[in-house]
Each structure stands twice: as structure tokens, then as C-alpha cells.
Image (cartoon, rainbow, N blue to C red):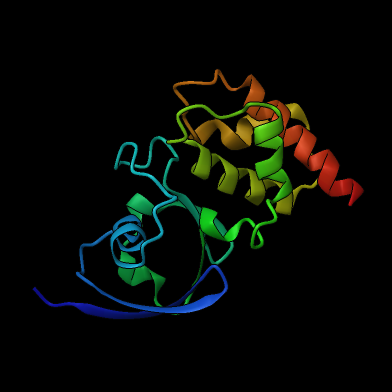
Length: 158
């Protein structure tokens, strides 16, 4: 099988990897780059657990080929915090106990950040619609929504 050399930027850092032509971006992130935050929940793009940003666009990395990362910017959950300083969304999820098993949490945080980057003052309905592609089997969503709304408020005040 032919392999592909890919040069990209991941979480602000230059990255290179070799992958197969049918290898997903999720597999590349986890198995080649050691970024295990994105999770495979379904493998079909239905759960959002593998959500990442690809050139500023929210995508399910299980549906994107690793080769498609050539020359683009990939942002994952690992790039959300700045060193030991948590992003306001991360802190809000802790404060609101908006996580349990953690499988869905990285994808939800990436999706929520994408929303707040586009709309720093969303309504609760907008947050619910934006996160509708992220499934959680543990929390019941209310704590997640409240955490996102509180983080938005904190970020606007900063």
C-alpha cells in the first residue's frame, strides 16, 4: 500500500506524518501523533466524540482522511488549554460537573469553543442546536449547556 507524507500544523505547531491513503485523521492524531483526546465513539460521524477543527471548520475526524490535513491547520482538545492554565470552557465544565465518563467531553469542548469563537453571546437554544451533533450517554446535557453558557459569560467579561 502506498503511503502519503503529510505536512500540517497541529495546535499551532508544525507536524509531519506518514499515513495510508485510507487512514482517518482520527487514527493519525491518536496513533501517529499521540494526541489521544479525540475519541472514536461511533466511527460514522454521528456522535461528535472525535470533533476537531480543520482550518477553522468543525469536523468529525473519523470522517476526514489523514491526507486531507496536508497544508491545513488542525486544532484538537490538546490545544485548548494554555500550558497549565485551563480554557474557561474547561474550567466551567469542572465547576458545573458537566462531565462524567469523559468520552464525549473533548469533542463537546472543541465544538463549544467553535461556537463561542463565532458567537460569543449565544442563547441557550443556539448552544443546544450547535451541540446537537455531540452525543453524551452520562450527563443529560443540562450541565453541559449551563457550563457553556457560563463560560461564554466569563469569556465576554475577560
